[in-house]
Image 1 (cartoon, rainbow, N blue to C red):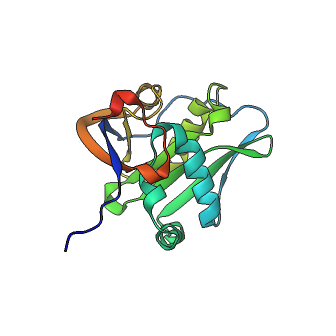
Image 2: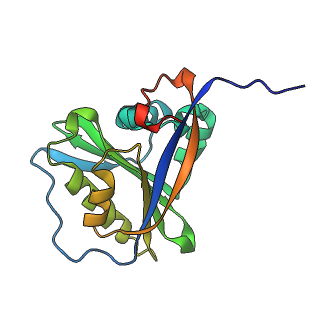
Length: 189
């Protein structure tokens, strides 16, 4: 008996893995007036999906869209995961997710701005907030990865913030068509 396979579109992305081995020494750029970052004490599955889906909609964030609510709830309940939301004028403008990996350090698992917040000087300050929040826990290192589906300024911003490139690998992703994501033609295989 063959397994049912859902229709997918394959895209090819170059995934770049980065690492930071010491906290930055320069002054952090301030968040703009009216902006603040809140570490959520608890994050509901619907709110997490709203953050993930809205921030990632234009950048092919697809994987967690395929995960059942029960698994997302379990992930959000883990003490090694934290969700930090950028608010501006009282509304969400972006978020980041930190994943503590024991001796392997902390991973900046997700980072991004809502579409309406891009291009308003929030990204650099939010990235530094994420970096400082991670280093406040004194990890061995801080890691992040980005890919050619992400915003074109992602990789240069990570490097400018003090991350160094470890390696880049080509991956082919089977993005389920049912997700309705707009897939850039340049990435389709």
